[in-house]
Amino acid sequence: MIFDTDILIWVQRGNEKAAKLIEKDEDRFLSIQTYMELLQGAKNKTQHRNVKGFISEFEFSILPLTENIGHRALIYVEEYSLSSNMRAGDAIIAATAVENNIPLVSSNVKHFKVVKELELKRFKP
Image (cartoon, rainbow, N blue to C red; front, side, top):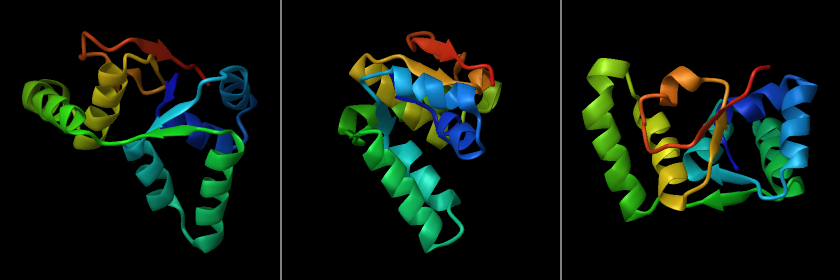
């Protein structure tokens, strides 16, 4: 499963349900976009190290931004930015899931529900 940024933020906030969701999935993936968002949200070097340590400890595979993902994300922004406020970061995360044919789990379903070909799983904290 690909985990949206919000799932890892829930874990950082101590949400046990989010932590168990990650623990039970043996194949853990992140879009490079999510990894960058987590690092960008860190307020200091200690938090940077904590993010990197968490990603390493739980053996997340970081999926790169490929030409196909970039192209698909551009299409999503073109199609959905005006009608549904699709942002570039969410478009990249959705495109990563679709291009890799891996379900995406998020509690921010409204960000992704317009993408018809995306297999989206809702997380309720």
